[in-house]
View 1: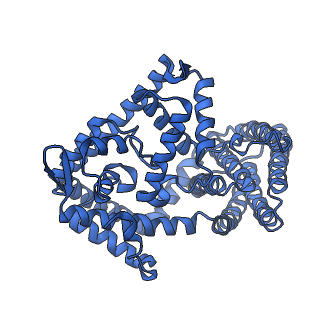
View 2: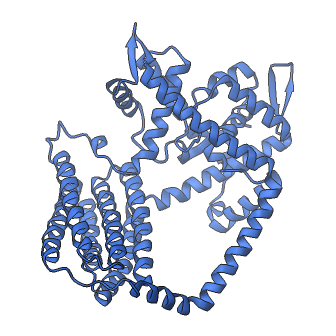
View 3: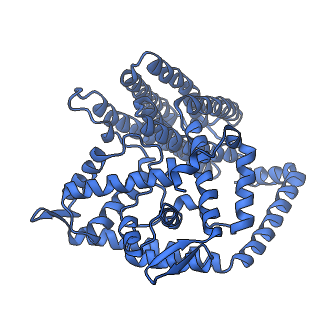
Length: 474
């Protein structure tokens, strides 16, 4: 049996979330708790190759060096890594050696692969459900309605111009959800994106004007515990929405969602500014609030202008990959590290590197499903070519006699990434070795956390009253 045959065994019933959770629990009981999940490492992919009939160790090393996974925590695969996987597989009784340079799966190893393939396939299905334009618009709309109402009401109660402005800014974001919908409905995504950025710039201009007025007549702000709590929640929600919309926008190629992701980034910035203004207000420095608001307004206009300049380029000059959002950091870093690692370990021309990546991505998609490219549907030769050119332009890579070579700058970037990976592995193995101890500590922390929550619920009104009294004492 091969990995491809496993897919036919998955039924519609298997996609129910309750069954998925039970399967995860069953896996933990049978195989132990995986540190960060099989979708973040390549050990599972190594076992999949053996499951597919690759028993020769040199051939395993050759194929593993190509494997690409967008969620992987490793820099790349070296021959020593495969030897490490062999030792790990034997210690867990997933594989056995025969004829010195050949490996095969045990029954336990086969069960491990089959269980994890099931989880990869089904969880990928649910991720595709959540990473859709429709779902992200619903989640964003609900979040904005709740946040905007809370901020406006509390802003009025403490007379904070920054919080009131932020509340109305969040409320106007609902208009942007409608614009995104219309852009999708009438296939005018680029126009919808331009409108969103223009609204963002308008928000920045409004903030500049209102905060200039407030600067000449600073208003007394009465900060309290509740205001800090609201702004803290706002930062977390907008930060999550920023990444969520960026990932969905990038995966679907939706420009308006990318623009809205940039707008959520602006909301985070505004919230941080309000937080700073409230803190200075404790010490009666009320003029800081409008100064921070004014600075943020200028930054919003600047960011909006730069984004808009990309959007209004001619069709033949426009490149969606030039539109950068925060969520790209995850994707860019992994792809860049993969390219640096592959160039360092092989003598390859640009076309050979692209072909290697295509083969590695195909292998990743086969074993890890959606985790292989994190639903970046356009991930392929053109994307890799773009990043190779970026590395050459940045001075990390150069071409000598047709081969791609790492420059001293490229080697420095590689070793920096390698150092981070080594640190990550040390922590992971330390956690695995002390698994029982970690479980006990985890239980104790859970008991402590539950106790704190109970105490907060009981004494919250008195605690908030004391904190507010302390703030007003300045």
